[in-house]
Image (cartoon, rainbow, N blue to C red; front, top):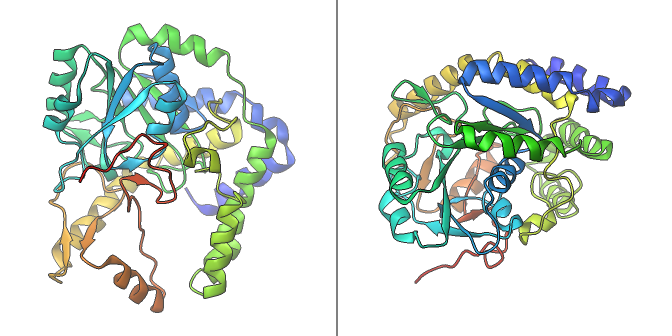
Length: 362
């Protein structure tokens, strides 16, 4: 989808507020996703809303525990905390950045009610092993496909293995509508309680749309042009601290509190963008994989460590380096912009790990 088409939809939404609460585009997106994934889909305003609604629909709450991997975004533990449950962290495999199944099994207690299996950066997690563990202990299995929409494992789409799954349409995701997400339901027992919960939701305020609009245009027209200057970086950091355009991770979420805009329905304006991006999903994923294969063949510097190739998708191509800060400083001098995702056990690094119930073991 071209940037011009995105801009047209955003501008139309700005001058036609009724588009924001028009349910038709969301129904269209639901239909297209159900056809693509061959499962039941409910669009929402974010991936974290999707996690929260699944947990609520499954009756998970106080005194319950949900196992997640200990290398993730705060968008995963936060919805667990919002239900009153406790996130329990299991260590990852350094070679895949996905969870270690043995560590998952060690964390199971009588309080455990669910496992969230993350497919990090588009690499399929240990699906078969986690499915066996979930079945053995009669636990709900939720796939986190925020990074992996369109990826497959043994010919089957990720997100269709567990009882339920979530996808995200947030910024820098596989497809983006600025904000958004969806629930995938594979276990029929979950459909009624989740549908009932969603029937009581409304749309985010139009003010939320104005913040998304502001984010999109401020970043593309202004911030990117001054990013590599000291004053530009200071400006960006200041605006982020003020939540000027960062509705991705608000101040409340850094300490485990729930903002008022979760969970909500997916606004019509954003659903239109997601639907248009969905039409080119497979071609975009194919191109991502082609670029990843090029990197795999042409990175010879022994100071970089790359992960082993995989057959999912490549939302990000991961490079490991002993001194990343030196690398970023050198890249900045040459005006190269490298991503620095997940540089802490629970991203972003401003998050309060204690509030996330994450404990560093020594």
